Image (cartoon, rainbow, N blue to C red; front, side, top):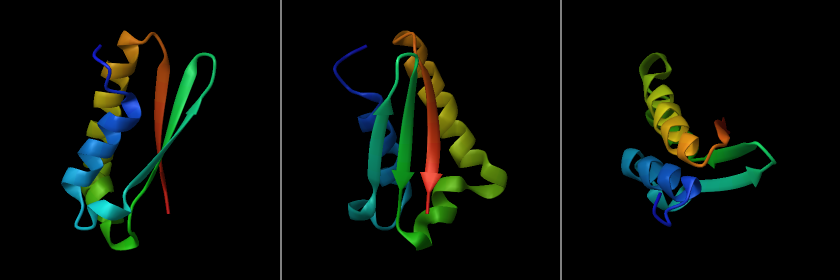
Amino acid sequence: MSNVSLKDLIEFVARALVDHPDQVEVEEISGAQTIVLELRVAKEDLGKVIGKQGRTVKAMRAILNAASSKLRKRADLEILE
Protein backbone atom coordinates (compact mmCIF):
# COMPACT_ATOMS: atom_id res chain seq x y z
CA MET A 1 0.00 0.00 0.00
CA SER A 2 1.23 3.50 -0.70
CA ASN A 3 1.82 5.94 2.12
CA VAL A 4 -1.88 6.83 2.44
CA SER A 5 -3.12 5.83 5.88
CA LEU A 6 -6.49 4.29 6.70
CA LYS A 7 -7.29 7.50 8.58
CA ASP A 8 -6.66 9.57 5.43
CA LEU A 9 -8.80 7.19 3.38
CA ILE A 10 -11.84 7.47 5.67
CA GLU A 11 -11.36 11.24 6.01
CA PHE A 12 -11.28 11.62 2.21
CA VAL A 13 -14.46 9.56 1.69
CA ALA A 14 -16.32 11.32 4.54
CA ARG A 15 -15.37 14.82 3.29
CA ALA A 16 -16.70 13.92 -0.17
CA LEU A 17 -20.09 12.92 1.31
CA VAL A 18 -20.90 15.76 3.71
CA ASP A 19 -22.03 19.40 3.38
CA HIS A 20 -19.52 20.60 6.02
CA PRO A 21 -16.19 18.94 5.11
CA ASP A 22 -14.30 21.28 7.45
CA GLN A 23 -16.05 19.61 10.42
CA VAL A 24 -14.95 16.07 9.54
CA GLU A 25 -12.60 14.63 12.19
CA VAL A 26 -11.06 11.17 12.20
CA GLU A 27 -9.15 9.83 15.19
CA GLU A 28 -7.09 6.66 14.91
CA ILE A 29 -6.61 4.36 17.89
CA SER A 30 -4.08 1.62 17.14
CA GLY A 31 -3.78 -1.63 19.01
CA ALA A 32 -1.61 -4.68 18.38
CA GLN A 33 -4.02 -6.34 15.95
CA THR A 34 -6.78 -3.75 15.60
CA ILE A 35 -7.15 -0.18 14.41
CA VAL A 36 -10.23 1.75 15.52
CA LEU A 37 -11.16 4.83 13.53
CA GLU A 38 -13.57 7.26 15.17
CA LEU A 39 -15.39 9.52 12.72
CA ARG A 40 -17.03 12.76 13.78
CA VAL A 41 -19.10 14.91 11.42
CA ALA A 42 -21.48 17.85 11.83
CA LYS A 43 -24.81 16.77 13.34
CA GLU A 44 -26.74 17.59 10.15
CA ASP A 45 -24.32 15.44 8.11
CA LEU A 46 -24.76 12.32 10.23
CA GLY A 47 -27.48 10.95 7.95
CA LYS A 48 -25.34 11.42 4.85
CA VAL A 49 -22.48 9.41 6.35
CA ILE A 50 -24.74 6.61 7.61
CA GLY A 51 -26.96 6.45 4.51
CA LYS A 52 -30.30 4.73 4.01
CA GLN A 53 -30.43 1.62 6.21
CA GLY A 54 -26.74 2.12 6.94
CA ARG A 55 -25.65 1.37 3.37
CA THR A 56 -23.09 4.18 3.13
CA VAL A 57 -21.36 3.33 6.39
CA LYS A 58 -21.37 -0.38 5.42
CA ALA A 59 -19.63 0.52 2.16
CA MET A 60 -17.07 2.64 4.03
CA ARG A 61 -16.42 -0.29 6.39
CA ALA A 62 -16.00 -2.64 3.42
CA ILE A 63 -13.39 -0.32 1.87
CA LEU A 64 -11.67 -0.04 5.24
CA ASN A 65 -11.59 -3.82 5.71
CA ALA A 66 -10.14 -4.33 2.23
CA ALA A 67 -7.42 -1.73 2.85
CA SER A 68 -6.62 -2.98 6.36
CA SER A 69 -6.27 -6.59 5.22
CA LYS A 70 -3.19 -5.48 3.26
CA LEU A 71 -1.73 -4.27 6.56
CA ARG A 72 -2.67 -7.59 8.18
CA LYS A 73 -4.71 -5.77 10.82
CA ARG A 74 -8.41 -5.56 11.60
CA ALA A 75 -9.99 -2.14 11.26
CA ASP A 76 -13.22 -0.89 12.78
CA LEU A 77 -15.07 2.32 11.94
CA GLU A 78 -17.15 4.00 14.63
CA ILE A 79 -19.28 7.06 13.98
CA LEU A 80 -19.49 9.35 16.97
CA GLU A 81 -22.12 12.02 17.57
